[in-house]
Amino acid sequence: MKRRSEFLHQHPRSQSLLRRMVLLILLAVPLIAMAENKIIRHASDRFEIRLAGVRGDSIRLLQVTDLHLGHAERLLKDVSTFRRIQALVAQQNPDAVIITGDCFTGDSSLNRMALAYVPHIFDQWQRPWLLVFGNHDPEGGRSRDSLYAAVQRSRWGVLGRHQLSNDGYAYDYLVTLADTCRPSPRWEIYAFDSGSEPGSKKISTAGLAWYNQRSNESRILAGKTVPALAVFHIPLKQYHELAEESRSSIQGEKREPVCFEEDDGLALETFAVQGNVRACFCGHDHYNNYYGRHHNGILLAYGYISGESTRWAWPTGGRLIALPLQGDGIQLYTVLPH
Image (cartoon, rainbow, N blue to C red; front, side, top):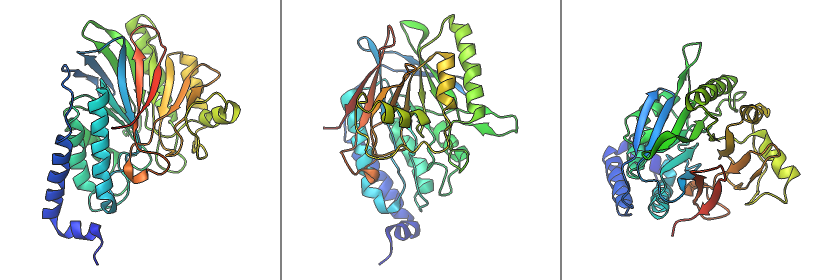
């Protein structure tokens, strides 16, 4: 019997049928109508999201992580992942969605098709969605450049990059959150590429230099320190320290070792010196979803596993992040579709 990946590769009409099936399933889940938000691109690494309909006293962000889309053998699980996230968006009605890495995975005949249909499906959420790279995203024939190009073709996708001295690019970027009632920034999001190759699986030195530069510029432009989030895929070394030293004070589950790869702790130290980052959000470890406050005051939080192909210990869902319009008392909620 032929493997499903071979079948799809040899039958392109089946790929077209699959694409239509996925879109029809997603469109069957109703979304809540919301005021039109606006994405303003100030530079290749700097965006502003102008929120037209902030509700209540907070900005609501939905974090999803480790979707691991693209394995031909797991197509039905991919469809289930899409439907569950679509249901979360409809139920929680967030102002924006953040995907903290490993959106794609593996080497399969669906790679090029996935790059074509996934941004279109995410656009059905009708609100900004931010993507940071995980270690599995640039594999299987995909590159950071091809993923970047795919997001640029979407209406609501946000993915930035900045030029390096060696003529290459680093995929770190800044998003400012404001609202139409007050155009000055409410919050900022620093999105980092935490690497994928052995020896580089951490927020890079170039990324931290970029962060320092953008933070200093922001402070001058705003005339104050704007509270910020840092989002990335691979956890920082201090996530491990938090779990070991403050196990009784963390909330959520820790069911596997913290895989902080090559992180040396410098990133969190840099955030603390700048004094703007209030919380960090990551993915990578599928069976950890805990969060707690580091002794330097910064909240360290995992997301909540969102990909059906990686589900094991609990149902897939997401992390709802409520950012107050006044002060910096961030509220976190685990949300499941129903």
